[in-house]
Amino acid sequence: MSDRWIWLPKSLYPDNQNTRFNALSGGPEDTFAVAAFRKEYRFDKKAASVRLRFSGDTLFRLWCGDEFIASGPPAVGGDFIAPSLLKRFNEKAEKAGSKGRLYEGYGLTETVTVLSVNTLSAHKEGTVGRCIAGVKAVVLDEENNVLPPNQEGELAIAGDTLMNGYLGGNNPFIEINGERYVKSGDIGKIDEEGYLTFVSRKKRMIKKKGFNIYPLRIEKRICSIPGVDECAYFARREKEHEATYLYLVVHEQGEKDAILSKSQQILKNEFFDYEYPEHLEIRPDLPKTNVGKIDYKVLENEK
Image 1 (tube, one colour):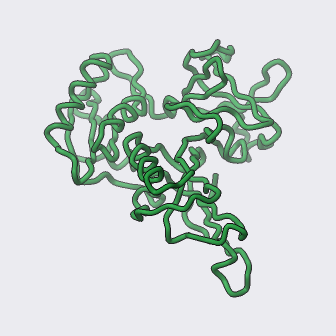
Image 2 (cartoon, helix red, strand yellow):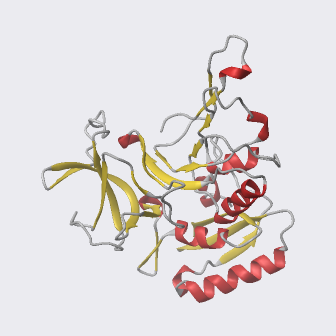
């Protein structure tokens, strides 16, 4: 998706027209979610619905209200949403009496944004939902063979919304059983019920001691610790090898020593030795891009 936008209801404007505001500029791949939202955007239920689309992390940075409305939910997308923040958001929405919930989804510019999404009626924790109508997804191995359910590989997408191609000859498309698919560049898996799990951006994969490390898998697990707002797992060149780092940002009420201890325990018990970071620390914040995403390039090049 190339933009983020905000629809504000016609009831807020004297000309009785919907007004569209450009909010942020986004990258080529996006996640989506369904959410309750801030009291400040309260509106007449007979008016046009309010929709929001922007970075999941930005949502939480902007969200500070204590009350939610229970009208039709907006859509939120743009980046990975920390499970601990998602849980806090949904708990506060439920406490306030809102029917809205925050659920993850997944999309690509090449498929005209959203392609799968969790909904109130069909959702599974840890996934990005099922494909929407008219869209198909498969998982491929390195030779472009379709893998069975629950096997990890590169996600490939087919459907009526696929773009025609890239200017300049880059060709991410393949044909499977006479149907045109676009290779996403993302690692994931699909279960027997059709729910997609996003594992990692393929380009973020780290090679260490001959093994593949998928940072997002580690980040998701660490971000599920209560009190952790966000984290970043990355590699940085040090002398003759690449050292791995894990930086955490904690909620202001979080106990730093307890969170570090819990993180170390999880990394030791749930991950392989080669995935354990050589450097683990809590930071006050993480560098961000101009659209509010963690800037991994800055982290990788820090001295």
